[in-house]
Length: 278
DNA sequence: GTATTTGTTGTTGC
DNA sequence: TGCAACAACAAATA
Image 1 (cartoon, rainbow, N blue to C red):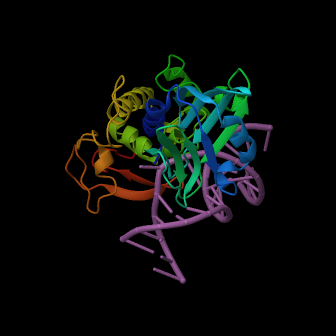
Image 2 (tube, rainbow, N blue to C red):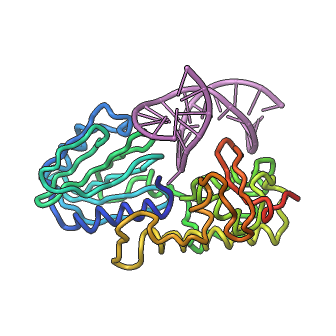
């Protein structure tokens, strides 16, 4: 599930349940692939007795900050294709796909991931780790300029624009559905080669990246302290989002049929009446 | 049994 | 060398 706004949704869900709370116990599914490259036993030892001191989301990743008997530590979560963060009652019994469970006094934080393309990272120290600080500048930041997009498209000139939008080192947090949403709004055909976009199209792409990122954050992750009860609950029907998987789905703008084909190795949905290959 | 899935990485080949 | 394409990872569902 998790792209940009979903990562923020899940971050906020754990944050609101756990801020300033102490971790009483940690359960890990040690052989789960989500721990590849990290040491779940060391993570358990360090987190027990630690207090939840804050969190951030960037791109598709989430960083939780703790302080405990061993000092400051950072828990990084990438939710992959099917990961989610839940809040369950105290005494919750972990299920098969619950790979990391933090027991607080009144609640239980659960990371579950069916397909295990997600990843849990752990770092001890006063400064955030490089796997966090190396994430590309956010789409809504000042560093995400139209010139930066244009030069990236120039370097990836022979790849379909759809595939380029999925590259995290320039478009952090954009995933399959956001990429389709952006191209549909910008009226650009997903198979167009990145190097073939005219300046006005590059500008439209840049603008819709920022707009979709901002709107997705507002509707999926809420504003201020507000956390929507369900993921995607507030996404308007006028978005491509709701129609892209429907059999016989129609373009919300033209009311003409949508098309689904693999582009850049991913299933891609677009509106041929609106997104013309030229 | 086959094909599908909102992601990333390593390998291959141009 | 740089870049593009693709398989692989894993598990459930249609």
